[in-house]
Image 1 (tube, one colour):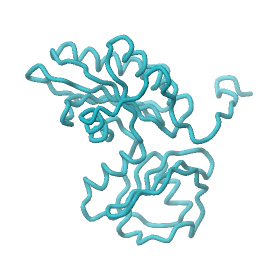
Image 2 (cartoon, helix red, strand yellow):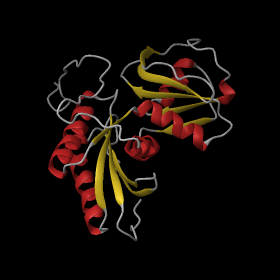
Image 3 (tube, helix red, strand yellow):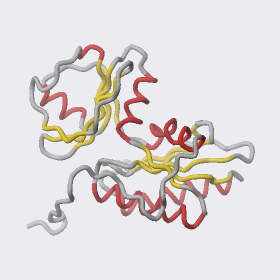
Image 4 (tube, helix red, strand yellow):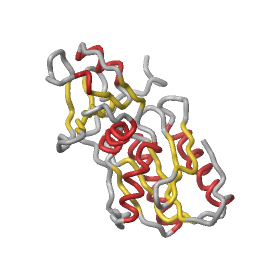
Length: 232
């Protein structure tokens, strides 16, 4: 998605790299989406994400807009993806002398779905953590959200009114199968555009990170494995 910015304005670059398909978005200071690009190849952060970021920077320059901040999904999610996204974001912040914004990706996804679906009362925001496990957070319309946790999904794990629940993330099919529930609303995520409201609000409130010391929230320690390229 791309639209020409008709006037010089302040914009925020948003980088999402916590899951399968990296993406970038650009919004103005009040949260209007101006540009979005999503890679359709899974696990391509190191190869594709720098290209997406450069495309976004080119769009900003060609639109005579002014980059005022860079926002990044703070995690949890893919260890490698989060590190690549954070490194790119910090590099741009240093080069352009702009602040860094960290967005709770699970909370942002959940709030995005609640806003899009007024009949939904709760959202399970989930990122695949391999096997039967997910990184998850439950976001309620009229209650406080739960803490981020690593949960192993099994039948009868949660007691919910499933008719008023939505799933968002990259593990929806797995969650439906393991929890053995039927959900009417499932939304793919995470996407950079789903973080716009949080990014613009933090920009307006000047809630910025220390660029030098910022680290993504991994939730679990990194466990190295053998790349599929070298597996026997």
